[in-house]
Length: 581
Image (tube, rainbow, N blue to C red; front, side, top):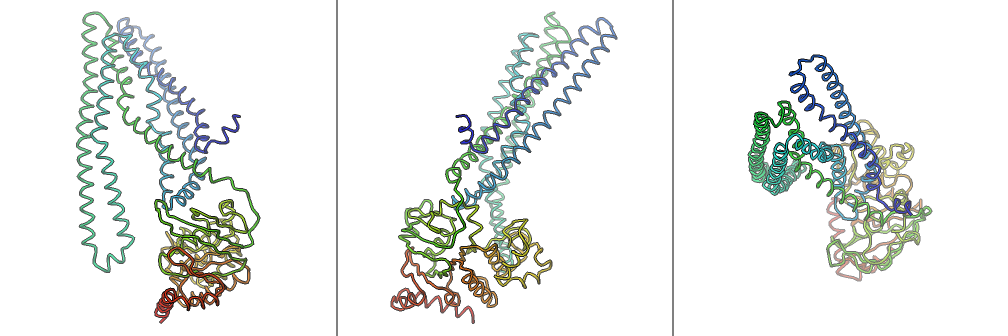
């Protein structure tokens, strides 16, 4: 029963549970450290109350040796605790980093937006808390009560003063948080808006420079940036005032303890050594309360990050553990598929029914926003149907293990994305162990081998962030080679010739011919007539529905009879001809 419960836990919970042993050691170390902290005030008491009055040098020497040994042990244990927590944090991150990375990709896909970086930040937030002074302060907090009890034992009024000081410091921490929390959150939002604008401008630097937009954009950004500066200034002023008030209270408490101690010594209620001991102990007793709000906020951030990560693991776990299936032959089937975007009540696709046999080449055409790209994303499993089923070789696409299915799918999205690394790594799907022969074969099929050899370091050329050193056409052709890598069984190309010149388009046509020879089921979304000529079948999509589907000759005849669609298609062909001219 216990094993079943453990198996049902998310990787995050399992890893945190494994950290409990180290945290227990940290608690034990904390107890030893705080006990050793008592040695300094005890030494002061003994020196002032016994050594000076007795003039006993041997006692002084013995006490000094003991305190030096205690402080040495204290330093070693504190160092050991810090190293242990740091090692635990590194182990925690290593255990989860791969799972969080994979989870972030899946969650971004399910949410249809990029949320992956938040998951990585959440992991860093949890790790930072586990190794931070904040968790040490929380471990030491119970010992503050022990120190206050010791102060009460020394004298009731000194203990009461310590309790009063702790309450005041917690109150000041709460006031500081209340007066700055909303402003800090508002400032973060404004700062993010400012940063996004800067990123957008730098991303479009060419347009900004050519069209002389720098001045206007500076004024727009400066308006936001001044708000950031103003908010930061207000927050900092409040923090400075409250920090100085807190420092004043803390110093006043030290003076109050000394003054009260002197008063009690005069009246013979305590010894002079107790004054020194009390002064040292109250500083130690109040330290956790002084950092109370910082530790509490750290814990709240830790808890939020933990809940976000754990929720992500729970959602993905429901979709995980798919059984391995044999290599697909290439049969594709859409059964009454409907699709709605997240948060939308309208169907982007309605009643989509069609099938392809292994080796078929399907050209999907239609006006903009008709649903062509949505069909492509459903075929490759990037999105899931709202209603209906997409089947590969008779199996529901949802039943495939996508880590395994991915090697059988070649996908060229409408917005081509390459990764930082070499050309070889990108064609080999970022597999460091990809065979050179397979990389070169994919490049040759895509007709990009010679182009790559002309690059400065050939296949080992670093392409920069998002392929920044390459032209749009080069990026698209390398992405096409990546789609052909390792002999896929399904090929989905969304506007594969959008950035290609005539040479690149000719290479694409040859690549599609190779796909036919190898019985690769291919879906091409394009308006170019040259690619339509390669297709076996044509699908016409309009307003999220299929208005024509079948063998190329049959659909072309049908298009001629359907004047509205034919007009659309003719206009597309006309635009294509104008582009070539």
